[in-house]
Image (tube, rainbow, N blue to C red):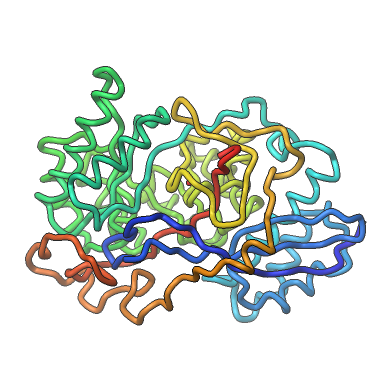
Length: 411
């Protein structure tokens, strides 16, 4: 079997409501989802989600190769980018191609990827994550009621702009999930997408912890600030979670060495091989791992095979336009199917014919770190925005691209 080519396309995740974080909001709820499809001479095609940046140069590393040599080809792709580096969206392109190769390998073996990787249990524990910073109280409750109906008993909210508003919103979700769980204490997490300085982080979380029990605080300071993350970890009770924006083991090493991370995260866009290697590194230090992304399908399969998987992020309960996946959500877990490979099917005609397209991203959108991030003296104005973004500035990191549950199967 040989790799013969690739195709790229972009669909959208239609949330039907504003989604975003402390940096800004997609007011129309339309999040672009880039897709890479790798073809072979055996008629098997593999599916991956991620950027298309530098894809011609990166694809040259695997063109004509046997796709089943996945980990070797992953390292070849890294070597093809070593001069300029493999950070940012370039790493995402490598991850998308890597995921597609794993899909091909499992399809060729006639097995679902979770089985091929050595997984025993097809159930992957999940937590709810609504990218919910722009929602009113009623909208917030309604969104998490939907998650609760699928058995989710842990939730990660977006925040970081106002202590009292974060406390209020976390309390609303805590009460809702406590009732849904018949009195059992739910799990609560807060994600601020690198919005704070070290002191801001400790002060904000310490104040919240007077009345709330947080499992983790996610990306409280800049992703590479090992000393800062360690300072936050020593100053609060909650675990520090980070890693979704790190690329390569070399970026995790200093954080782990500095005791700066308690929950090791990897993004779906990083690919399956990256997740497996990060998981092994974390396991060597007795640290749990948690995949990030809207139903990170490749990482869900891989999570079944690692001993230190904690929980995976579940964002939207519906798949992107034109995508179906053989999995569903029940009793607070993703349940993977038996379809060979990732179990993903793509309707390319539907995607290309779809009339709706995401709006062009503005220069001050959620993927751009605001000029005053980390330099705000007072809490930001409260309220909900009908327009493009929140009426307050904020901090870093975009909402994660969506890709997932299928109506028949299943972020």
